[in-house]
Amino acid sequence: MAHIVILGAGTGGMPAAYELRAALDKSHRITVVNAVEYFQFVPSNPWLAVGWRERNAITFPIGPHLEQKGIEFVAQRVTRIDPAQNAVELLDGRRLAYDYLVITTGPKLAFDEVPGSGPEGHTQSICLVDHAEATWARYQQFLDDPGPAIIGALPGASCFGPAYEFSFIFNTDLRRRKLRHKVPITYVTSEPYIGHLGLGGVGDSKTMLESEFRNNDIHWITNAKVTRIEADKMFVTEMDEHGQPKKEHELPFKFSMMLPAFKGVDAVASVEGLCNPRGFVLIDENQRSKKYRNIFSAGVCVAIPPVEVTPVPTGAPKTGYMIETMVSAIVHNIAAEIAGRPADAKATWNAICLADMGNTGAAFVALPQIPPRNVNWFKKGRWVHLAKVAFEKYFMYKMKNGTSEPIYEKYVLKALGIERLER
Image (cartoon, rainbow, N blue to C red; front, side):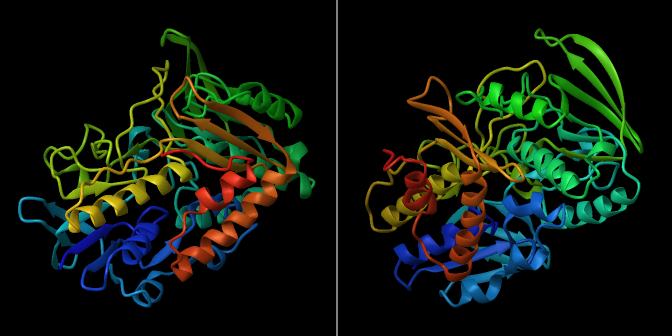
């Protein structure tokens, strides 16, 4: 009998648990360990942050849903991984032995790299449901005394989509409240140009997103190195194409939401030989640790090199379809090893994203993620907004009911006119 321990119960960990349970007979134990007792659908946080969702619509308690599928659940933070003894240590002192470890923890938010940033500083966040709730509270105060707003991404960020989403959702909500004329909006980003997305651009993303910003009176600063943030002012060094200072900005604001760079969580990053210097898990083409052969990893916590060198550091995003295929590869490979077969499954590292823009939306497909690509397009329309709402509802249904079918493979690709992708 094998014991598989999964660290993290997000959009990687929960599907991994369900798919493993479907693939393995009941003699094998599966245990999910998560720092909090609830699942949170992070892609809906931009809506929560402006009051378009309530917390209970995008969260649910994990334990009952996993347990009804025969999966054990522990709501504890992991303090240490001991790969020599094949065990993890928990905050309450417990120690769990494993035969296979699956790391899907997501990232540590590196707000500390820019003084004054983050919920403990002077900017808001939508990275966690708690952050989004706090942003909604701050936004309500802002509505009583509106003024300049800054939205964007800090140096080293890799997940730019939510910053664009929040810019447009914030803009749309202010228009609905008849307050937009009182709020100058500036988008400040480490990307070298609008629409880079950490991917070197996708299709016509640069032109289309610049056009949307112009049409909605959103100004921007790219190649932006935010150096520090005070209570009502952001200090930004705009770099040139060679990475040299071009212009210094002191931007006043009354409201700001800035996405941070990511790092690996402490318990994972501290394992000798497991991670790169930023704490992301080093994996081979089969999602397996390069040093510890019974450790696998998927999602934001894995190491992926940047698509290209940029004047201000940017990282490559890990989008939903990529994570889904990482998880499926891990499940296949663990099941194969247990059965004595070769563990040869590989993920499809392609980028597919549905981004809401308030009352419309944008979809992009980059196959593969790193150019040159076989498929490379970016399209806009209200249908994307509607598709994302539908996707939210179905994903929450899947996570509550334990269906193991791949969402992107079965539904999203067909909705985009792509019948099948080779793994």
